[in-house]
Image (tube, rainbow, N blue to C red; front, side, top):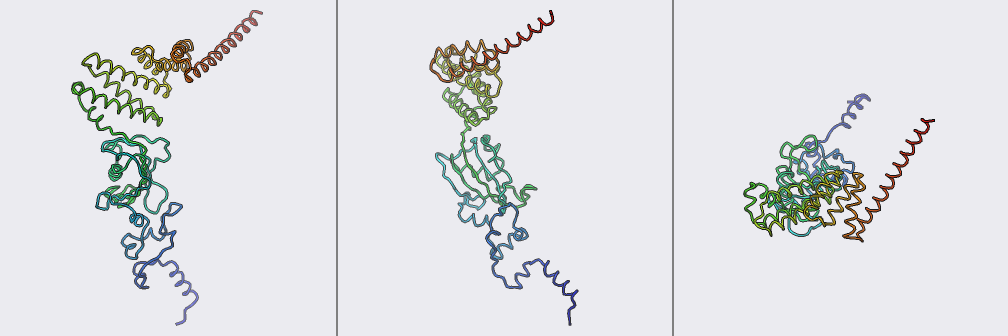
Length: 371
């Protein structure tokens, strides 16, 4: 039978748009599908491979196609023994592993397969916030993985669905039954379990614990606050310092020696609060805590300096001069004090010049009125 031009074009068009199915692979006896390297790896533009996205996992295994996550899994360690959490240490850390109930500062990025673009990341943050295990870290696999890591460590994890987003996924970013890749870098952590236990006690119970226990809790709070301060999370630092101040105020000293020790520690937190409020651009609060520090130790140079800073911020030049002069008398060669005194002199001169200019304009106006 002779085929007409029209029927030939119709059949040719049908063949061009035909999609290969497993039946076609069996028909042509294809034992193993070897795809180009750029198809079996993550796409550089973040889009899923146009071939593999239409193939179910069972079909990939049937034709011997190894996915990027499968290849990565060969070089990873099984954390729990059930294949649910796989780990590869890229850069080893130092010291003990992250303890349970710790607060951690981490950089992390999460990826689905065949995508270079993370569905979540903290890499845009210069200083990521501290996260409390068991409260702030919501991904089960990530929390378990963190417990295997050390400070400074950078590792990759593959989390199976039951340790990640489950059977349903998290539309529209995470498909159902998705294995996810996480890259995690532990910047720092603090074991805050003792602080949490202490804070759960009543005020009466807190007063019965040994002084050494309270001092450990206060030191952890101060370290936590200092860590937040150094990462420019000033609100978090302020809350830690204020919590410590509450614990100190609630404590009833048993003797003069304990009272003296508590006053010394209180002085440190008052100075930290004064500086923190300066960073938060609240000089009145900063002055208040600086003056409380001076009530404990009137000769403390840092307290005098903080009060001088606060007064300068409020344009109270005379009080700033008084505080900074007293501080300079204690430490005449301190560069910070001397620099701030120079700044004060320039600000005060500028203020006087403006006052003089304003008075000159005012009196010149009066003279023209009289004429």
